Image 1 (spheres, rainbow, N blue to C red):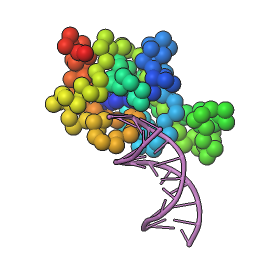
Image 2 (cartoon, chains in turn green, red, blue):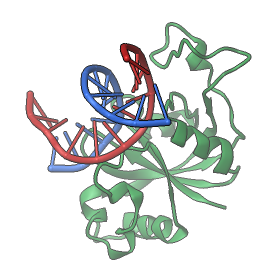
Image 3 (spheres, rainbow, N blue to C red):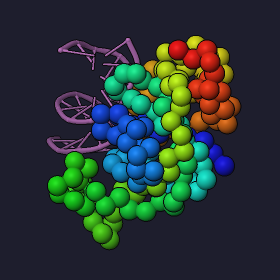
Image 4 (cartoon, protein in one colour):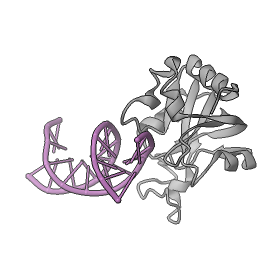
Length: 156
DNA sequence: GCCAACGTTGGC
DNA sequence: GCCAACGTTGGC
């Protein structure tokens, strides 16, 4: 079983939206590396850190779980969708995604700023300059360290 | 709002 | 297949 960080901009889809819906098809990934993680490396049962990007407070907001195999992202076929890709077709969908189940919202977010100060997290892709990938693999140590920090009373 | 880093596009 | 131009991401 593997662990992942999945980024979402809270202005378009926040941890509260995720909590309310209970699960989400992870639509709109239009980067091949991120897509390939979903298509080739993710397995049902993998756990994810739901990360709020772009809009403060930046940081780990909660947890989710992969609950489907990859399947075509139909938003690529919809001309009305912001994720529309005219190259995609039913026969050749190009873009795939997985479903992710909501597990929990952290009582305290683990802020990006805090992550930069935790030794166990220094080799995370997320902390590297210019790291833009919206889906990133992390180690079990990264995952448990973030969870521990999220539940610690010294957060904030 | 700025801009560095990176991915994609398209002319050659 | 190279690479300059362009667009996007996302922290600051």
